[in-house]
Image (tube, rainbow, N blue to C red; front, side):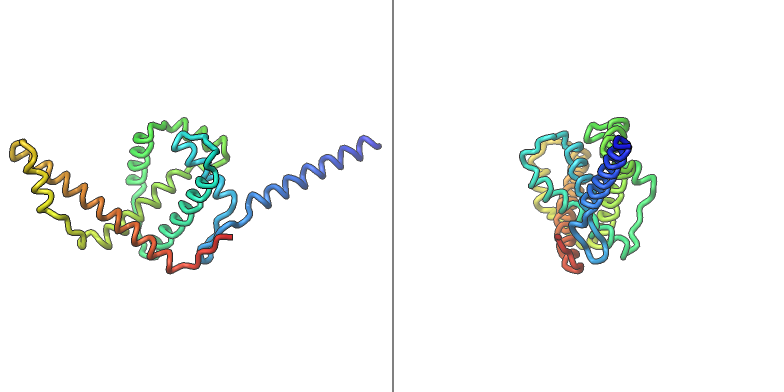
Length: 205
């Protein structure tokens, strides 16, 4: 009888601790208007960054937490803004960009799936990140592409330093224009994101 009582007490304590642990894990740590970010979200992002950067260094954990939380807030804002303007991308576009992302990071699908399983992260975590960034990029392109002015004089000066033929020079010019436009659009995207944040009530709890 005594053993049975001790057994049930042990089970109760185990279940109680699990409940308390889950409550802590799902504790809300930030909100953007009616959208929330939990401790669970933060831990997923921290582990994801460690995986992508191939780093297990915990000496800068506070900095990593801050970066991860900022990533989550930025992502929420990007999705809200993209939803408001009904910006969409196709499934095929997402898959292509996801493939390119993994190729650039030298990560195969099997590694990614093992990581997701080990850390109890949903299989489409990275895919959703890629989709969010694509929608945001499209929003910026749609809004600002016609307003971006590339300094062609500086590009022509750069090309004049090369000794290639006219075909090579034309190819180089197009590459430089494309690159410069992307630099300008990235700066605009960062500025637009900061302005967008001011439209929402962001609370760090």
